[in-house]
Amino acid sequence: MNIILYVGAFYLAIGVLFGLIFLLFGINKVDQAAAGSSVWFRLIILPGIVALWPVLMARWLRGVK
Image 1 (cartoon, rainbow, N blue to C red):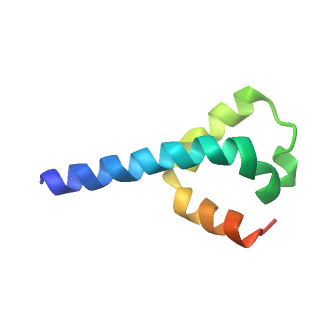
Image 2: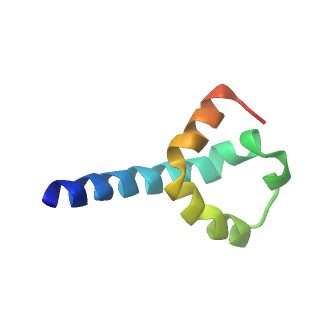
């Protein structure tokens, strides 16, 4: 049971770290509509970025727009 909690915590920690980096440097490359968006918008989408970080990382690395 503990291994599930550790894996979940690890996934969440990586997601938060990726989310902050992605919001600062990557969101404009993946979604042009988000360019120049407000801090409030970025805070609203942060939980989604944390949950879907593997998908967004793949899109960011491929440069998909």
